[in-house]
Length: 149
Image 1 (cartoon, rainbow, N blue to C red):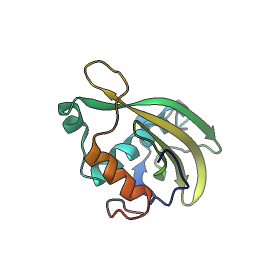
Image 2: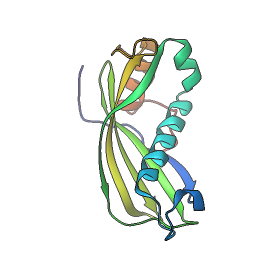
Image 3: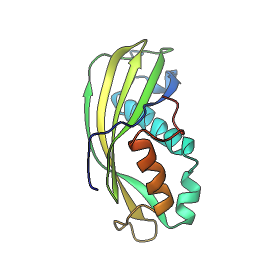
């Protein structure tokens, strides 16, 4: 099975905008949206009971392969944001997440982020370990219980 329509749950991470996230005008610096999205994907993984340090011990890691992002409206210092991650493609060695950043339901930023599984020692493509693949598959098919959506 390479791809099918996703029924996966949406994981949502609350994020507060701090001064360190903004430019001199108090607006979130564009690259920080990607940092917020990285945090949401990391917490999504944690909700599936996997953590980055454990992945490295199993000789694999995830790397961002590509990203398509659209900025709609600016976030500002002290805004309370909701950063979401939804798995929209599950392959044996790749995952695609649809992510968004919202403020009170208003869409500020959205992205499609393709993540590849690689060996930690050689940074070469490798299949996801079977237990992790099965967890993602359950989430993807809407049968998982790990996400908060």
